[in-house]
Amino acid sequence: MLQANGEAAHSLARRLGVGITDAVALDYLLSSPDGLGPTELGQRLGIRSASATTLVDRLDAAGHAHRVRHPSDRRRQTVVATDHAYEEVRTALAPLLERIEQAAARLGSEQAAATTTFLREVAAAMRDYAADKE
Image (cartoon, rainbow, N blue to C red; front, side, top):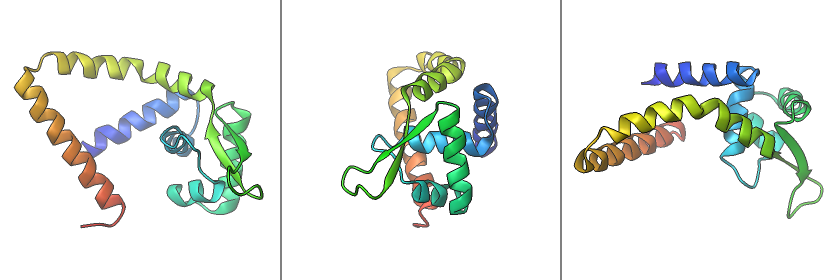
């Protein structure tokens, strides 16, 4: 499952015309409606502050993200995904999502409920693992 996830992430990056780190950064930004500070984004990606600044510059130049003033601290900046990024990612993921919907449509209601519960538990376990929780 992890290998398939990695392959899908690389495919998404290729379809978007960006590197894998940029694609992962976009995932973080798209999942954070209020945006992330450049330093926080760099920490999540495991890259240094200077590299995070360069990455944000690339995303900005590509129209995928832009910097805005932090809502409560005007000295800080927040990086947010653009509407263009949302649309481009949605378009790039459309074939994958269609296949997932086809697979889901073949499940009976009990199978669908069990599968949903299972996937939520797997996602929670993965998030706990990533947060170093046991």
